[in-house]
Image (tube, rainbow, N blue to C red; front, side, top):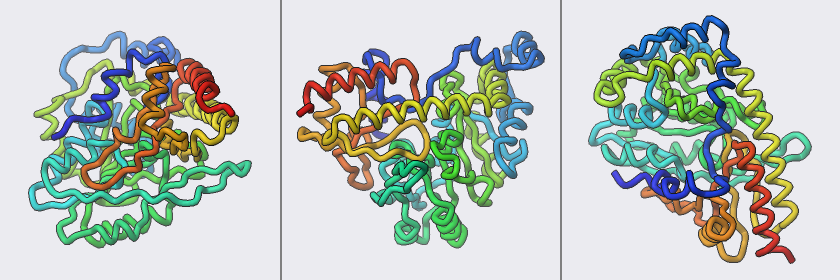
Length: 388
C-alpha cells in the first residue's frame, strides 16, 4: 500500500506548527475532567482495575454501553477495536478477496480506498457540488452530494462493498434520508455490504441533519465509530464496529488476533465513563463547534475573495475552496511558512481512483484556545496579503 499521505504530512507539522488549524478531532479532555463526570463506582472500578489482558470482543459492560448508542443493537452486535483505523483495515481484509469490487466516494479518508485496493478492484464515485441547504437564519450549509444514481451506475455484478463516511471527512456533508434509503435499496438488491464510518456522529451542527446509523437500518450494514473524534479523546484508542451480521463480526474478531489482540484495560474503563456521560460531552463539543464556525465565517466575510465558504453539516472539518489568486496549494504553503497556520491542501486527498479538486483545503474547527489564536493569525495573514 502507498504511504498514508495525510499521516505523513501531519507527522512533519502536527506537533510543531504554532497554529494547528486542520485537526480532525474536537478539543480533548484531561483525565481530571473526565473523572469528574464519573460515578463513584466507576472511579473505584478504575482505581482497582486489573491490568491484564482484556476480552478480544471488548469488556461486556463497555459493549453494552456502546449498544445503547444505537436504536437496535445489542452487546453481541458490538466488537471493540483499537481505534477506527483497525476497523477500516480489518473489515476490508476479512470481507474482500481478489475478484471482488468496491465503491468508494471521493474525496475520502485514504484508507477507505487504499486498503481495498490492496485486495481487489475499486471504483471512485466523485461527490457532486450542489446548491447548499438553507438552515436557520438563512445559513447555507452542505453543498456536496453523493448521488444515488452515481452509485447505481458504478455497481458491477461483483461489487461486494460500498464504503461510506458520514458526516464526511473532509467536506462535512451528510446524506438526506431519501438518498440514504435509495442507496440502501440499491445495495440490498445487489447483495452489497455497506461499511459506514460514522466517527463524527453526534456533533451535527443542525440536529435535524443527523443520519441514522447504517447498522440499525441494513442487515449488511457495518457501522464504524470511535471515541476519538466526536467525543474528543483520541488518546484512548478505543473504537468499535456494530452490525446485525454477527458472523461477519466473528470473522473480524478472529482477524483481530493478528492485530491488536485486545484493547487497553484502562482505556476501555475510561471510554465507558465517557459514554455514560456522552450527552454532557457531546453538548459541550457541539457548543464549541458552533462558536468556532461563527468565528471562521466572520473572518471569511471580512475579507472576501480569499475563501469560498459553505458551512459543513456535521463533524469538525470543512473543505472550502481557495479563491485567492495563487491557488490552494500555494495558499496553504505561505500560511504555514509565513504565519505558522497549518491547513491541509487538497493534494493530500489525491485519489488513485478519480480527480480531486485541487483548489480546496481542509480546515478543522474543533479545538479551543489554539483554534481561536489561529483565527487571529489567519486574520493578520489575510490583511497582509489580501486587504484592498
